[in-house]
Length: 167
Image 1 (tube, rainbow, N blue to C red):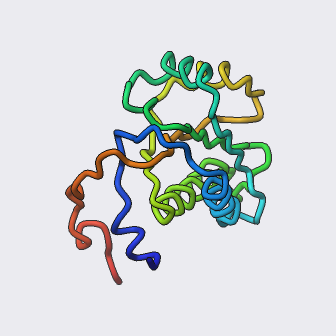
Image 2: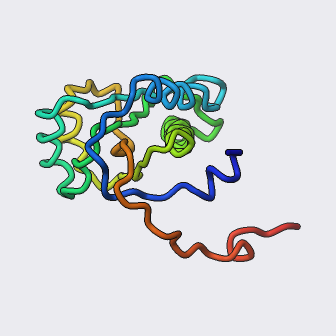
């Protein structure tokens, strides 16, 4: 499968089989995230892979969608603002760099036959507390990771003309 097929195939998965994710696949996916570009190659990104059932259960205080917990793994992508490159106007690129790495992770998961669903609507202070994160780390996005139980049809996307201007 080439990159364009992977992009076309990717879906937000909201139901998962209980089958474990083999370490070999997980490592390939994390390696894809590690290789993502970052501004000035600062790599201000940190991933936490949650396998522990008690920790997963405690996440329900931060994100209350039952389907999220049907996957065998949850991955939390954190930005590390103090490590990030800053533009001359002060714009910090930590969140952008973490977003790019998370996108690499999601596409690599699709290539491995696994499902994900980008989640940002969680209660950050609770996630930080559960994961015992210092103030250095900012949880940015989470995704369940596992084999899809159901693969939904593609969702509507705006026409390219509504998103691109060529001048």
